Length: 275
Image (cartoon, rainbow, N blue to C red; front, side, top):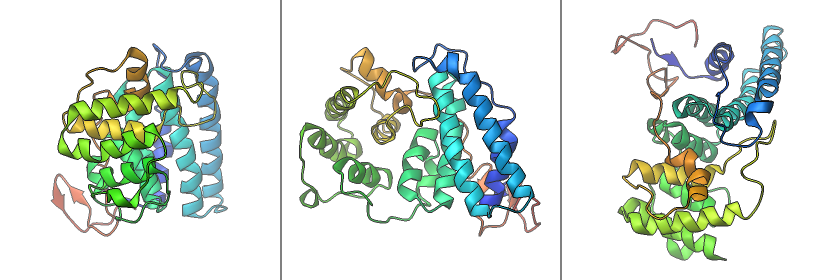
C-alpha cells in the first residue's frame, strides 16, 4: 500500500528505516569514513531518537520535526556513500532526503538529490520556480533537472567553470556526449582544486558536490559514458556516474497527499494509518 506523503509519514518512515541501516564495509570512498563511521552512525541514531521522543511529547511540530530529520537523513546518505555502502543503499537515503526537502518547499535542493537518488519521477512534481541563486552552476543544474531551456543572454560566465556549466546546459539535453565529457572534466578539476575532497568530514554533509554530481547523473541517464576522465575525476563524479539506482520511493512507496492511496496497483479511498 502506498503511503500519502506528509511530514508525519516521512518522518515515521525515516525513524523506522534507520533501525535497519548498516555501514558500508569498504572500500571506503572518503578517507577515514570506515574508522569514524560507527561513531557517526551512533550519533545520528541518538539524535533521531531524541527527535522521536520530542514528537511523542508533542514538543515539535510536524514540519519542525521533518526539518531536523531531513538534515540527519542527508548526513546518513553522505556517511553511507563515504564508507562504501552499495550505491543503491546510499542513494535510497539521498532520495529520502529529496522527498523531505520537497515537502519543506526547497525544490531546487530536492531536485539535485532526487537525481542522485534515482527519484526521477519526483522531478516532475517540483514547481518550476526561478533559480534562487545567481551562480551559473545553480541556474544551469536547476534548468537541466526540470527540463527548461536556459536563456544564454541571462547569464554571464566569469571563468572557465562557468563556461563549462553553460556548455552542459546545451550538451546534456542535446546528447553531445563529447562536449559533456569535456565540461564535466573542467568542473571536476575546478572543485578538486578547491579543497580536501577525498577526506571524510564527520557530521558534515554531503562529502560530495551535489550540483555537478546531479548533472553527471542526468547525463548518465541520457546515455553519456565517460570518455577522457582521469581516475580522480571519475572518483569525484562517482555519486552521479555510478550505477545502479534503487527502486524509487516515489510513487512506489509514497504518493501525493492529495491522491487516494493504492493497494495492489488499485486506487482506493481507505484511510492509511501512516498519513
